[in-house]
Length: 334
Image: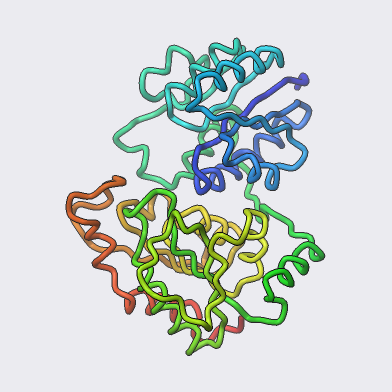
């Protein structure tokens, strides 16, 4: 295969980006003699620096017209041969067309087919019928003609770096578990903070693990006092530190969020709470994972706002989550 210049336009969400890694790694292997660039939104640049070392990473504020214009000029100068698009948006294909990329590959969604030279089949009514990570692999299979290889490990953590991180947060000698009560998506994905605290207290008392809270305060609706026995790291970790702490944790309890996918990818036992979204589409896949969702006719609706006051989240009780916790932890050596 001749050496080519290839650019991969990544998904826009942290969780979706984690689910795209299997396909990206397979593309890297398939085009191993080529020069590969990653194009992502600014907020995900650090993520791809960590998970795709060695690749050149470009980032852009896609909401800024001037930034997009500058990006198109930059892409033109690179004289790219192939552009591979993960998002379904019209604009992601339009940018590649304006940049004069010779071969543009992506799902044939919306009306952007006029910009694609190679159209991956797309049916809107059943696109979410299989897991998103499997849907992404269709891009690889379309280009390569073969099924993707299975990948067991997505991130190797340096032991020295890990030790430094644990010391920074006073965790080197503690058996701890992580509570991740936030979600960038909004209230439709946020289980009550007080419920997380209740489940955390239960795990602490029964399994003698130290609870560690992570996330960002603008994504969490803190509605109860945080116990003194909990270690509160909300707003205190960067992405790499979050990954390291997750890899060292004994257990993870979370909403459907980016951190959930990090824990799942690292094969950490976890319980995830689902509201308006679907475990079939974006759920954890590890054999040490469980999820809880309410049984309502209106879900999954995938909406950020709910005219029924997010009943799908409010109906899930702490006891339901505790049952799933015990399924994973009782009798296990962790």
